Amino acid sequence: MCTIKVIIEKTPDWYNSYAENVEGLYGGGKTVEEAKSSIIKSIKLLKKYNDNENVPNILKGKYEIVFYLDNDIIN
Image (tube, rainbow, N blue to C red):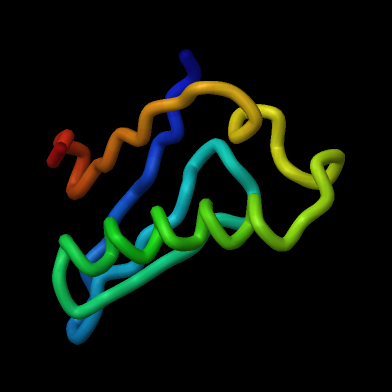
């Protein structure tokens, strides 16, 4: 099983999320939970609206998502 590493960064008004090891996955929200939900939606949209050959290999099999905030795991 592969691991998708998602970093969540706090800005003054927002939480930004992005996959460290998968290009093109971004999200955000007013809370950590919204940022996590947004990146999961981003994965679903990427898989839905791209041909299989354009989907990163890591998303074609089983994977887990690990979220990091300030260098700490927050799952």
